[in-house]
Image 1 (cartoon, rainbow, N blue to C red):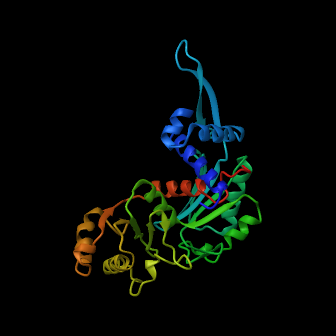
Image 2: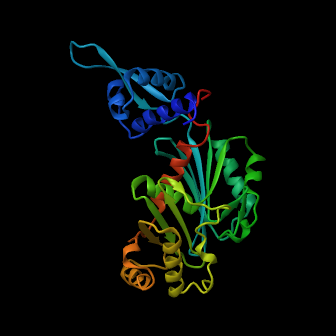
Length: 320
């Protein structure tokens, strides 16, 4: 942290992290949970209350005792919109959610399509912006690289080279974040699992595999966001079983993860032992990561989008 405003923002987030867990907390309880002084909590809770980010109510401690203030997070404060589109078994799944910063889904819409053009996607986003008031941010997940707001190597052919950031700026001045879907999944996984280095590797049918590695809360993205694009390794165009082993051996050698989480319909739970055994023919046992299988990373996807929204640059400053 570089100055007092950074410290203030960090402390506000510590208080909100407590309130986002749900429930009601007194000032004393928040101080105990965060390790902040009651004076600091009092000052920042007053700020949050003035901004309508928290709700305050008086509660009597006993029949004869004095009342104390109890605080809860206001779910209507700064809701954000998540937009995600995925290619799943040759169908495009579009999902748009209105979310509260405590993680509650306030509204969900979308559909399944054979094709998805940029104009159709923007029409859905525009309708959501028209429907919901007070949206603070757009958090967008895409099955592609994001190169200065342009979608590259997208699993959805109609969106290849789509200037998504420019299209968003043409309809709204609401802040936005556009990230590769695996980035969100890794952030969501890391928020619930505390291994030092975690790699998520995804092997779906019909499209290139991908992997993302997160180290101590930081995504290893490389100079161009290309790190983890294991579908571009040599001899993977046939998407065969051997290519999965090659992908994973290369990932282990280059990134040395503590845990390797495998998903996608090209892999089954029963395959994990065989995959590990095949990888161990190339990797010394001392450097083999723990292998895990997860059929569905969807919960981590949503958790990662929430994490991005909560900790976005400029959030929770004095101008809120």
